[in-house]
Image (cartoon, rainbow, N blue to C red; front, top):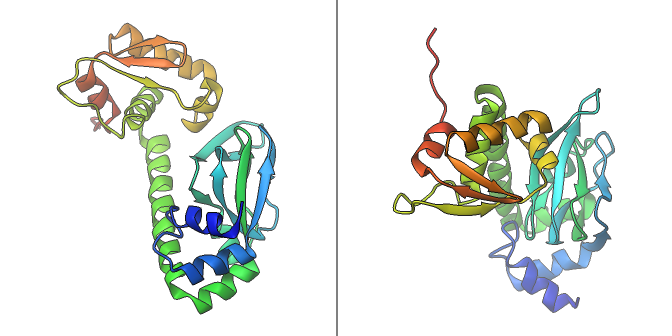
Length: 235
């Protein structure tokens, strides 16, 4: 990929959109394209962070592992998303690990050179604040779901998120496709595959959804939305 083409692509990412041609060129001068195969480790929890990443092609999961080996997926990033910028900015170790879910091409932005650019181009820092805020909101939602919702509620919220968070009330049925394997989904929802299967079974037997492989047909939009909401429990 030539510098001009890379500049054009960078301008479509959230973190670098709106930057001038000279600013984009300064970024491409320090950035490095790296390729990863499916399942390859991008970085490991506890290792020193030397930079952050922007996804050109593919998807990457960021996760933590408990001492017993149980995985908790914190986020799944797709093309044009950036990740690991917090650790890169404070110079400390990665608080989580990252693995490519499929063949991926990532743009690596080294920390030292990027910090120098921030002093030269403050506009880049403003864009970074926007992405940090977005990631912070996502993590707050993860904590909320794990702390206050049971697995069927988390599953309902996830299914709605595949349709941008809601289902048109005028539609009696809607089909969505799971964007990760069921084992990965279980890790993202903070549970184990067996418990997730029971949640799918509950929603199916209640007539809220119908399953066919990775396809989920939403049969009762209102009930799915009601289930996804936090419910107050009596004392």
